[in-house]
Image (cartoon, rainbow, N blue to C red; front, side, top):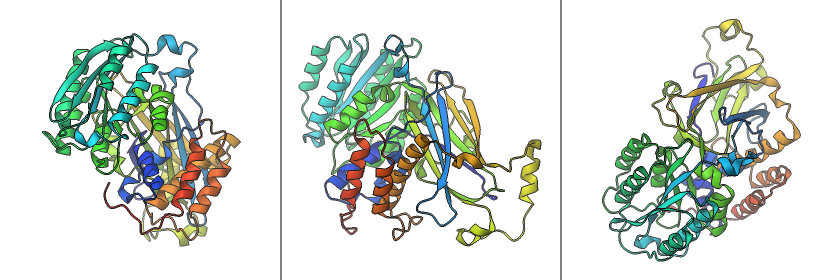
Length: 481
């Protein structure tokens, strides 16, 4: 930590990786390593963190320190949990919920013909439409070889017309996704709702298999980035398996000021588009970044678990032109750092030897700003923009050494997140997890201990998933997906 004490990354609430991994394991297949994004697995689950009372300061943060169950003796985990303002928790939520101008962009190419693709897309969108208010507006754009408007922007109260268009869709032809994106953005912009707090969003439902027109991921990324300035957000709903293009889905989701989810069943569609409809549709912050400065007096080494594709440069944190993550209403974001505390008792377990020569870090840190930071492990800063603003705001707080004194609720939530993080690292064959010391049995034990009330059964499903993964032969790895 003395050489690079600062870690910066984009907040993430995508969940696509967990859904895809679950489907692979349920098919008795070991998921490809690159499809396992530990942060998306952790953030698939909701956590009972404190909720902020005002949308003007839309985050409430929780911090905890615990022993690392997979690390060397003395190593610790630092948990940073963030809960977004929940518009549904307001007593006047129904009256003040933001208006919605949505464009459903539906891939109806030949690759979408199987029951788990276009037919599931139609059922998914019908469920979401039923959740919207009569005065919200939706349009439907489709693409195969070419893009076309199937339904011009219409009030949700015209459900029969909307459902009729959806149910007539049939899969055939090529995949002109680039043209579809351009047309969908055009429709969203023409019908742009500029009332305060209104949501203007394109929801793309696809397997990501673009093969006509613009197919280059860099070109798609530049186009989507240029559209962020219009105020239209993009969310990506992934379907199917076999030719599912995970990397393209990530490119689209990460650069469109939106989120990416993977829908493999009607139950998952209900979770994403009904139970979590407000989180999926209504942003409470955009371009959210997290920066942690570790105290070299207290921390010898650290590593962030997951977030490999969302790391930012130190200078990106204060640069409001740098894109980062969107956080929806009520979303939770969890980040876990593994640290090696300073001290002779931990020296033998360090990954990198301490330098023989260097400045006196202790004196330098204690003198910084005239403040005694000796009781701090680090300092967290969160920078974000409110949805309708272009200038960022900042919240910050220290990570104190006594953060290991956890309430029962915090211990439960952090404990379950740790079990998920351990599972993800085992699936990735992480070099930091010795499976002779921490394996599926340990994951199961932790998950069961910290399952909690589990209102919708997702944590119980996770436990069943771990059991299923534990019996899949390690050599049964899927090379393409």
